[in-house]
Amino acid sequence: MKKYGLILAALATAGVSGGLSGGAFAQAQGGRLSHLQAGALQRFCQSPQTVKVCDAYVSGVSDAITLVETAAGPNVARDVCIPGPTTAQQMRGVLLGYLSKHPDRLSSDVGPVTYDAFKAAFPCGGPSKP
Image 1 (cartoon, rainbow, N blue to C red):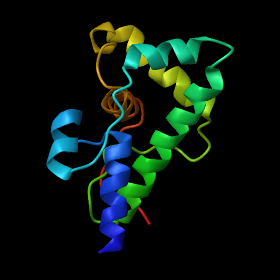
Image 2: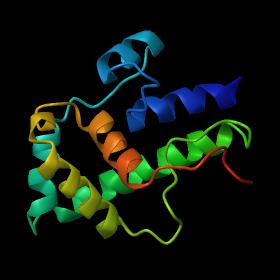
Image 3: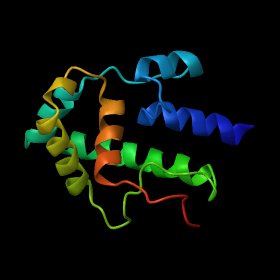
Image 4: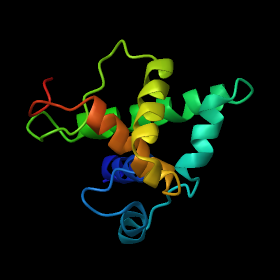
């Protein structure tokens, strides 16, 4: 049972919503999502003084996605498959590129936006491989 609590916490952290909006997912699961807006993270990602904050955030989301989808098992379809050698700087570039193409998302909660950016850039071809 403890394993599933960790999975739900990681899902909430990453903003993985399984079809629900970030706020609805947090309410449904009793979890917490950051209400940091994507535009604020975009500014962190573009400033030399705060770029490490951005890199830490995208690395955390990437870790959470990978841990949750791996814990789900090899027969569960995965949405996001970030290749192992992908760096935080590359993920930052993915997020910034996504935000430049979707300025309407700048006022949205950052977790679901980051997840959507990674899903668009790193889609999976089917069930995860062990």
